[in-house]
Length: 158
Image (cartoon, rainbow, N blue to C red; front, top):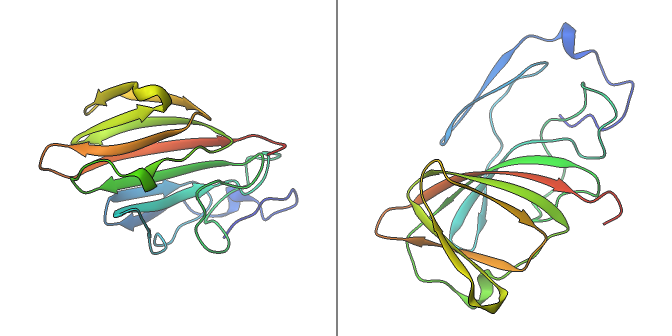
């Protein structure tokens, strides 16, 4: 349940609850439940683990996103996503840019990220990239799927 406005129920009154999904377990103070179905994006799978839904105003804010999955998160919001991508070559349809600052932390496998102009970097487990609204695309390097966590901060006036 997304609570983007002040005056939402007090999180301290709710129990610490586990949230289980295919990619792992999530604990959110003030709520629990099962992760909603993932989105299938470009051959990969994206789980929205948690979102604020709007600019942060209170620590009680946030939860499951409302409505269908969308790549850009709502203006001023923060989102935590888990991505799993199968092996395969880069595609032209994979290019995208969002009005967000993203921190991507590779959890397993190896990925390549390409920026406009052909600049490409390969990343493995424990490595991270800060993506600042640049046009880019991802693909998996090797024969194994790759997974990463993405924290996305959307611009307030996007």
